[in-house]
Length: 450
Image (cartoon, rainbow, N blue to C red; front, side, top):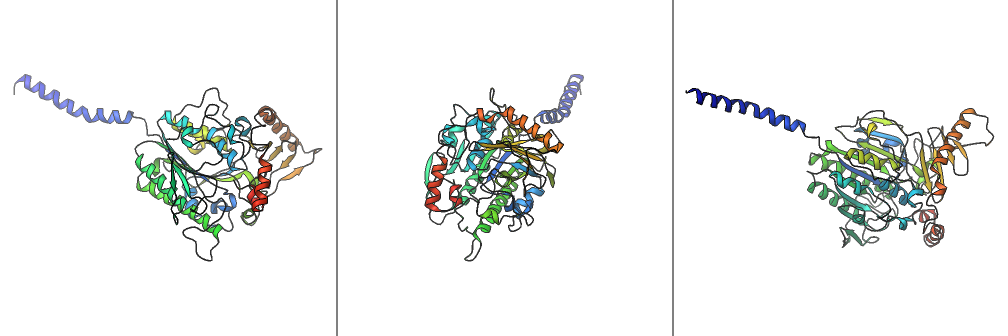
């Protein structure tokens, strides 16, 4: 072989040897794929409705398994009704900032004055979908940035007898007789994640379960307890979703958050006991049973499995958490009340919040790990919460209680909710509407039904 040919062959061989290393180096330099995020918001599901949170009467094996695969948060606080809770999730802002202080005040929300989650996620490369309940929030999910959606009117919709139609991507569709709407929602969700399995996606999944009217499920029998049936079917749907993610090989890179939107509704709250005890309060009340809800976070490739976290969490925290995971920018010039949970989700301690804030209809409280202070200046000892909230006398000499009240009052003074959007359109008529609904249908359940 001539020298020229030899050198040429040697150069080609060297290039061939280097090529795999260069390709490997390029692949290694690529950033890891962003996590998919599925936020499952169950309706009227309190601590006493979920097995792994100590329910005495209801079994939720699939949800319990989800908790074993991740972190069970034991002190998560919603607003006591679904409308304000959902607005806080979507904006990361407390009710007095947005004006969504009741179920009837959603009309104050407009895309011109509030930014919701999908508007933040989409510039970070996410495709977004809303599935299920959207009744208290105005306009359509697409008006707030969702790419796709399937929504129903009102709450607790299951069969065509009460929900003859639903809306999918702007088109009104008829729910056939004998078709179970939660199954239609599940199929829409599975189709969405299947079509977008190669893209990072964010899904806001607002389940029908277990909001009243409590009706039979496809699995109910003639003599079964329909309330227990609805909890079981909710659990079944969660399990089916996880199975689909496994099938699509998406589970390891999918963050699932399961949470209730407020506490258990009356009269079921009496029977939704935890380790033999009834919670203090229920849906609609500014008590533990109104706002303290089950929360589970599972991301198999990232979250430590089988852990409990007693960190205080409130519903404003999801907005900055998802934005950080997505590598998205928070809105400029907007007060976001949430604290990111990303360090805890990744198994680190982080800096948990010292207090949570809860508000409904012009009343509010702030709570830390041991005490609660209300708008009226009432202080409560929470050492036996969520079962007992013991009032502390105004002239107490307990140094610990005095210090707690001082600190919590400083928080309320800094937040200053009274100076926020408290006189919102629709809020004042809420009691009147509630009385009419209560008179028409009977019972406190009607008052809280929407």
